[in-house]
Amino acid sequence: MTKWNKKHVYPRPVLWALFLLCSCEIQELPDPSTPSEEQTTNEWIEQTMRLYYLWDDEIPESKRLNFGQEAEPFFLSLLTRKDGKTDDDGTHYFYSSINKKSPSSATKSYLGEGNSFGFEFQYYYIQNLRIYALLTLYVLPDSPADKEGLKRGDWIVKINNKAVPGDAQSLLKALDTTSPVPVSFGIERKLNDPSSATTKTLTAAKVTDNPVFVNKVIAYGKKKVAYLAYNHFTAGPTEESGDELFNHTLRQAFREFKKASPDAFVLDLRYNGGGLVSCAQLLATLLAPASALDDVFCKLTYNGQNNKYPKQQELRLDTKLAGSDNLNLSTLFVITSQRTASASEAVINGLKPYLNANLIIVGDTTEGKNVGSLTFDDDAYDWELHPIVSRLSNKEGFSDYANGFVPDVFCDEKKAVTYYDLGDEREYMLEPILKYIADGTPIQETVAATLRSSGPLLERIPVYNSLDRKKTNAVVLDR
Image (tube, rainbow, N blue to C red; front, side, top):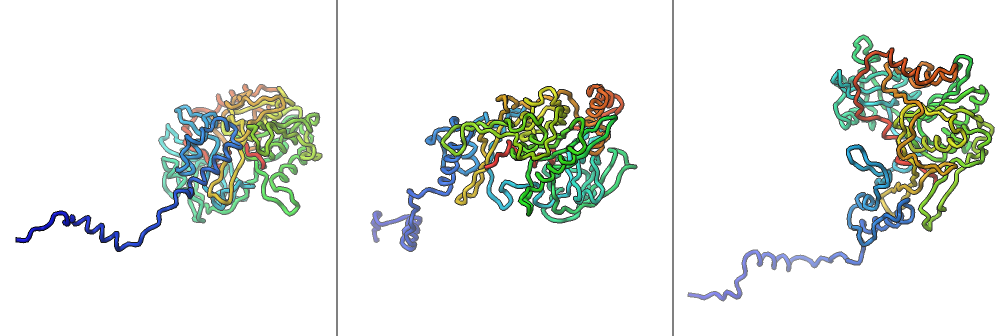
């Protein structure tokens, strides 16, 4: 009987491993000295943030950072809770942000790139009716919605013959505008009134969203009141003349205002979530008393690092910006809401030292964004950074409006029963101001009288507002 030498017996798995090792080419291992893509990207992010971030002294030490993780969590690991706000439920959200580059991700010169139905809405749960519905806030001129006759105040109760979905994600999917597919909307002019029902079919298309939404002079009593609904701070595409379309439209509006010699001015910023500081500077210059021209509009305080920005920069109410179109105002009424933010608040804060008690806020408490951001990118990386880099203050150094500006008179349009067009003298938030200008009727009295005569209100619970996609995390500064 043959005896096997156990020293030469190999288990079958080992034999297979030896076979594979012998039959395969030797693979080169990556050079550990070569940094990964994540490493180089995160090093660029860290370098940029240490140089420009307003709270650069609160960025953790490099040795405590994980340079091997994805860019987005790495960016967030650099931020301080002084950046942004904490919700009532304890959730913190940052104003600084990062996004992956795409053809349309660059800072836009104007809104409306891409298809749109051309209307903005507030999405509600109507508790006493147990339905979801969209309230039309405004309709853009010459848009698909405008051409089909959709109006401010219309309630959308059906989309493609189905009830409005009960969650925002499903709603946005139903309202997808990436492809020009007709969408039918079941409309009720008066909610829960079948006699007011109609159906409108819209096909999304390219729409120009000019922020100069309504500009008119209203004759009310013996007074003339200039009214401007200005919906976002964007300069617009550059025309052949070299001027920027939306800024040019704004100047034209003020030219017409000046011809009318108005007794008062109403600036409606209720739907304005912010934008470019240069547009805010232009608007404030057109509105300011003439005695304030060439004085300080706002101060930008940076972190003082060795970058191209000084510790403090001043923007002025520039005579060259206004040309001959400055209105030399002595009184300004500003209509606000919780969505009034960023550059809108910069205009309010910048004009307060010059108008004092004659700057009267009517509406709701504003958002409270008193900081500015810049966009940084590099061809070598796939990311854009939008860090907070400065704090904004006015001529007197006041910047303590992180909790928003509290109105002089509270007036909440969610309590309106009839939604007249913006600029209509019967409109819920405008009419009280016009009565005050015309005959001194206290604004509070008009608001209270309107509520008494309005009857029972719908029990509305806000779910989502389409304007949220337009708001900026901070005032957008010019490079």
